[in-house]
Image (cartoon, rainbow, N blue to C red; front, side, top):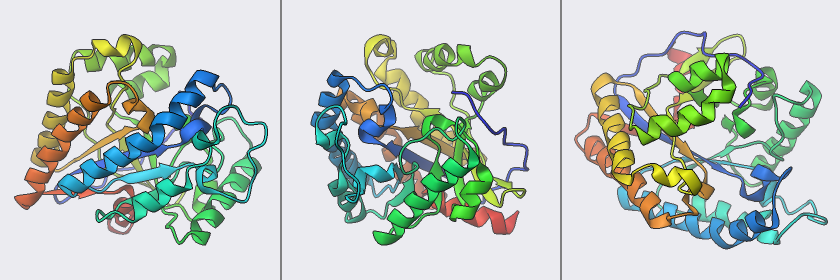
Length: 308
């Protein structure tokens, strides 16, 4: 995942208590618009909505909110879909926005850009145009526009984010994966799989204030990988333990465990994936109910800018 802007040089902002933050890249077929296959299109059309609804039910069960970073074109009825590959369902899912915002759990709807363009590969003007469209779409639907997740995690054009009104952005996984992003990016996919097979501890993070850009950076901790192909070698029991222990360590160290994924990571072995996620939600809810832990959305970290 090549990056266009190196961040994380700003000081970390201490937290009064540990927390879990979950951010979800909701993109449908826009996540692979430049290489989507008919098989992927059919699978997305059949499963994306089902997975999102099951995730929402699970979040309601434990009263755990999440940040849903949504590609704007998924709910923009003003633009056509002529010439796109596959069923319209994978490209246009406006009902999911209503499903998310109408749950009893107060989720945040953030932005994953308007058209899933790659900010680290385009000019500043193109990035600004995409953000203007996304911001306008959020305003027209009465949605906040505080949190941003970069397509393909290509962190770049931070000034354009600030001008568009974004306050918090997600950066890349911390720990060894961040180091590999900087020095040996080709090794990252192998390391990402290996550290999950081995159940290595997930790094914990803290928000950082990028004062040069007027933004709060929230690094991620780990991706909940899907279970297709070689990824099935990751034992569910190892992943459950990994997520639960990270949640416990976040409480102990007063740091943030920032878990992220796509709904597509639940297409294969959906029940197994939901059970893995549920282990972390149950632990977080138990710690929260004891009063020494929080479950936060990305937008909740915007306050870090005023206390650093």
